[in-house]
Image (cartoon, rainbow over all chains, first blue to last red; front, side, top):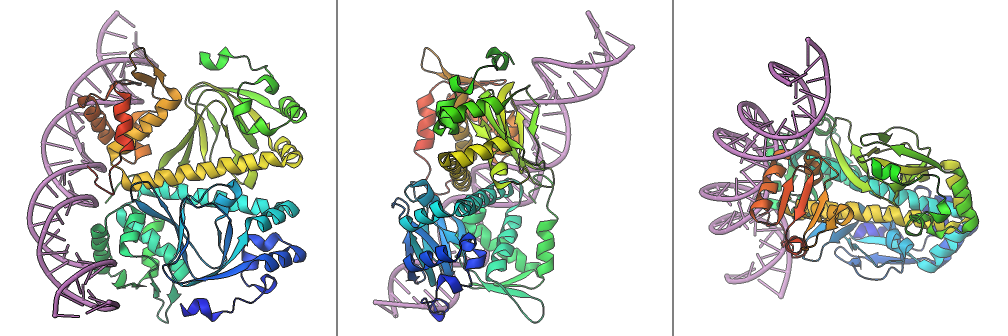
Length: 247
Length: 247
DNA sequence: CGCCAGGTTGATTTCGCTCAAGCAATGTGG
DNA sequence: CCACATTGCTTGAGCGAAATCAACCTGGCG
């Protein structure tokens, strides 16, 4: 939680290091100033709910620091993580742009700081700057691409393959590299959730983890993971198995 | 193929029965006339490729009749069907709006007739009528929703459950109801493709089909399916299994 | 201290993938 | 018109992977 409180929230959007990587990059100075005046900085602790499925969409969120998990659930208690949002990511635009109720829940998995932008402000900016609409369109198209990639991988990869992919992707956001070339990170999700992301049970994941350790590819201890040979893991998923040889 | 040739392609967009259900519904008469003048009607036989992954996106397609399968493939020969497009559906907008190369392939699975609309025309219409952009945005968001639903079902449903869902959804587009309340249709895809849509092998699907017949829920013969008790099938997926009781 | 959530481990069974054979419908060339 | 190949689908046997059920461990917490 120190990370979130570390940076003061009183800074301006104009100087925000996040801006040039976000959808706001297309705004000019006047528009950015408007955004800055009307935004509301909010802080969340790990476990806090940002919004829940079924709520009306009142605005969108721009991540300044931390990690937020976006999850989808059906009516009978099944929940799957859809994606994680990090610094610079904007989320909540789907419901807002469609003027629909939230179909996902968003929960801070670390202490996080983000700016809330009300729908009225987004509407003004969209009217003034058509490029912003195109930005959001591209984000949604990117989300769609990700979802289809997941579908394809679910259909073709082994559980181990899926998990390694997931680990490598998480490492790219959460990881640090040590002096000896190994990489390490703190897992942002529980094993149970990691298991549902690859479509298996927690017990199965536990055994997969055991096998990865046997093979000397990674070391797990609580929430921390270390890739002892990062290149070997990357090679394992870049040289993928033809069709369904689910071995 | 008679279905496709049955309706003359010389009709105007203004009188097209498809229009009021499609994204074009927001166009006024002048805009519709422009669309009509610049569209190019094209005919495809079953098996014909409309576009392939990797091609540049030169425009979009509006289905007048028939069925088109949109598929995604990775680099090593794995292919999964993403969705089927029917009369009134528009496809190819993703690549066009993002000005990107095709990421999917589109193949006519029945003889089909569709109108091709060049990117220049789409650009003009988007500039003139902002509501059209919103229409496409909603379509993409809908596609995203579908993809996430698939992910959730893949993670939670049994193979049988997934197949029944797929059947019911296909029936809603391809099916007819008989005098005795039973429903029937001709399957638009091969068993192999149906199998990949639910993430299994064709042999497994064959056994699932056998079990459905044993249970007296459906009858299969070649490409035709009959739901003897449609309500029982719907009940099977509406009263879904809690969590992963993959029985 | 006992309780609980999160995680691991083990024993058992079910499921689905693989390999292989067979079969019906369709096509092809002699 | 017949031998033959091809394609789409079904069926069977064997086996490996993963789900299930259950016990157990660990650390955190009232």
